[in-house]
Amino acid sequence: MAAATDLIESLHLVEPESYATRGYPHEEWARLREAAPVERFEPEGWPPFWAITRHADIVQISKNPQSFLNADGINFEPLRSALDRENADMQMRTIIEMDNPDHRKYRAVASKFFTPRSLSRWDDTIEQMAIKLVDALGEEGEADWVTDVASQHPLSIICRILGAPEEDEPFVLKTTNEIFGRDDPEFQRPGMNARESVMAAAMDFGGYFAKILADRRETPRDDLVSLFANAQVDGAPMNEIDTMGYCLVMFIAGHETTRGGITGGMKALLDNPDQLAKWQTDPGGYTKSGVEEILRYVTPVNTMARTVAEDVEIGGRQMKAGDRLIMYYASANRDADVFEAPDEFRVDRNPNPHLAFGIGEHFCLGAHLARKSQQALFREFVSRVESVEQTGPDERTASNLVPGLKHLPIRYRLRARSA
Image (cartoon, rainbow, N blue to C red; front, side, top):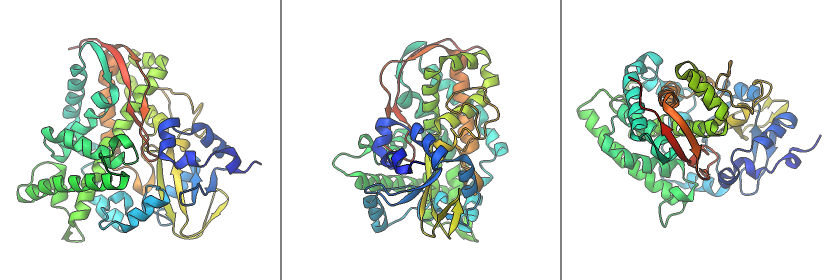
């Protein structure tokens, strides 16, 4: 059997620029799933890590949070960035980076808000936002699907739910792009390196929401920021940093990942026009399975890192306490042991046990909202599009965490909406 290091170039698994230029390394993941599904790598300039590429192993790890910890961070960063993070004066903690018992306590703050029953009150609002956005495209024309559509739809929804004014959406979009696209030069502030840029963006984000939080403590409203501002954990108010972390994580669940799904979904439909045609035969009927297939095929959140809490065996390999591992959800979602013809995009795929939202205790809190958002937009667009084509090269964000497309130029023709 060939050594894993002979099968692939390990930097392709972690280097943000590699994702920008090469996209997801599906061919290399396939080799690893076949020959070395749990394998240790030591890429130059990066900490050693175990690559977890098989669906079953990721499920096992995710369902054992006591053995695989989040507190050391879910991002996998080069050695220089890790040192910067350790030396940072302030750490903004989110529920994604908490282990139990804190994780359960803090997750409970918002869990009832995000149940399907609770979110149903937003159905009409989300649908009207989708209609308005597609209407704004006009009967025909050209657009950048990412900046003109995919970024705007989830941003408007999450700002409305959080309680941020509509006129502040451009600021929120710019700031979150700078935070989550930290490794991409396009999203870094002029004259700053990646660390300086993301710290400045985080300060601006914190200052902005600090004002809104203060207002909601004085005059609570029916929005998510009011819930965070007045929440208690263990009988005491949440501290300011954890409260701010909650606001930030909402943009991960509610904007960045949903944008990635909407963008990647359009790319999948452009590359598979037969599947778009099938969806159009029954826009309502195929919307649910179509969006689930987009989530599987695209997998907006590519990775999550964990730290091994105790010596443990996974996939026949022995890991030591303190080891770092990376779960590759995008690889798991192409696992032939789970999915028939996994590299094919099928809008009627069923069953579809994908891991795009994770699994276990850290299953994405915003999953129901992300599904609603994408279903509303694709149902509206697919039911009205007469033609759509890509007009130029697409561009991908330099990131190993959320390496979605940042530009996707299209030309389209739409029919008027049926009454």
